[in-house]
Length: 136
Image 1: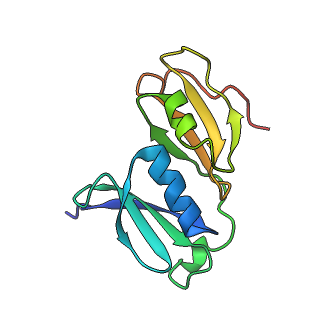
Image 2: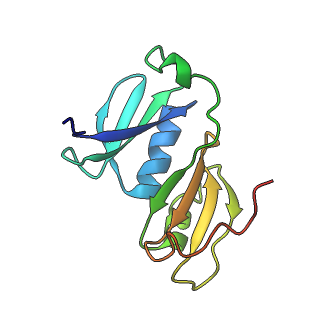
């Protein structure tokens, strides 16, 4: 039987530096590996949970993944949704669902600088309530 050692989700990025700074601010991650066309972020070098950012026109992007991604989202579980939103307030992001003030099960939905949808939630709020807006 095979087992995975590391699972890394890659997001296509139009500006690696902006994306790196955004996810560093939002998640508290650090760059654990990087090159001219990619950066891998994680809590530390030994972390098995990683977020990869890759230049959207890189030859290393699999052909099937090139172009605009459809139908997925990234969930990030944090201790404090409002504090996480404050950490990325200086970035050009669209908040499509703002958190309810003083709600321990708070959640927010936003788009990162490249337009990727992020569900930002607390561990208590993760499966306690659906998004506020219905799919159109």
